[in-house]
Length: 460
Image (cartoon, rainbow, N blue to C red; front, side, top):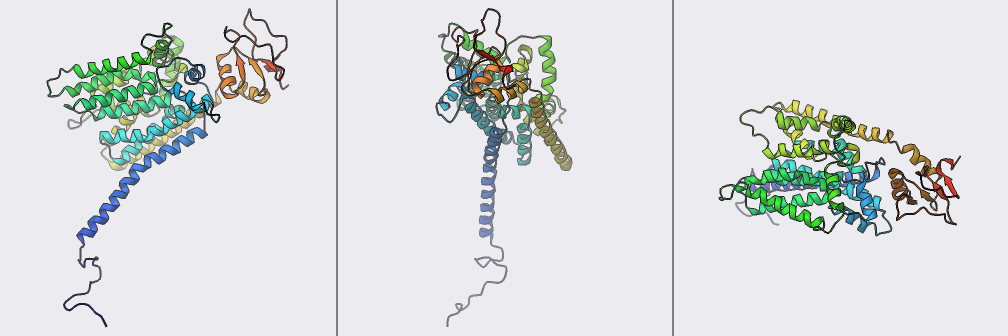
């Protein structure tokens, strides 16, 4: 028969394995394990949401065209571009499983998903607590611009991703940081430009932000910003072909991207901006107004000076183009999210702050979904597209002159479509295995093929 050693006391009820009434080491280990598990969940959650957002964007595509759809047309026709997306789309489309447009939708959905962890990291870098990081991320996710960019094969989602990554790097800067900080800003700004050339508008904000790096090292205050401008200008010059583009097509494409079509100011463009701009950011405008013009107590620090430069340059397309010609104002999305999180943080009453957050997120979701629905219902090409989808056959050859119709025919219906006005694409005379379909009346000077069939006459 065995028993407890002489003099030993059996553990009493409520003690830990060590026999202590208050097992400090075991409790500390348990708390540590719990905190580690919570950290892992917090780190994994944005990536799970990113995957969900990407899949949802692929499942709910927006069919309405936005301007000339340069991302897809440049990739399909081999046009010169400063960014890398056109080359990436051509690479992805080499697989039989993807077309140029489906590859573009895959890339934009991926960028929209990656914006989620990038946005949360931006807000956490600034120092917002966890709940506000999630609230700001949700407000950015449901911004009408973000939803439109996620579901459309245009440069908007990559542009917002690049701007978010750059904003995170700029908010990380502190006075006296070394050259590594400037290198991170330079490389991130270059990545943003490669994702969308319109992000070159953020160069002044980046130059103003890195001026803080002069610090106590005896470096002139203008030196960090000047070196950032020089490095990026050199990189863009290389990307433009280092002068090997005599037609200036790459330079024109760069300015067209930066200035929303570069059509110049006009009364119709101003009216379009007055309608589109309030919708584009939704409640994000409240965040921008609060961040830039809101009253602050003496102990609250104002936003860095480069934030005002960022917002001013992001509005440049309003002066130079038309909202219907391409993505614009997307650069304001990350700053708007920061402003909304800052607005909520400065509400002293916690219950009131939570109520305000619920109202803002709910309003943003409603505005974002409503914007997508309205854009779909008011699509001027919807009746034509429905008829063409119903009556055209895969073997048809279509003659068309409308750029929007040509885009649909080539990239969505995957038909052979020709523009007779282009010398490199003469009007075909027909093919034995298919019909020759005339989409719309030909311009003066172009003869109608004898065996052509009008699209409007097909299907009764």
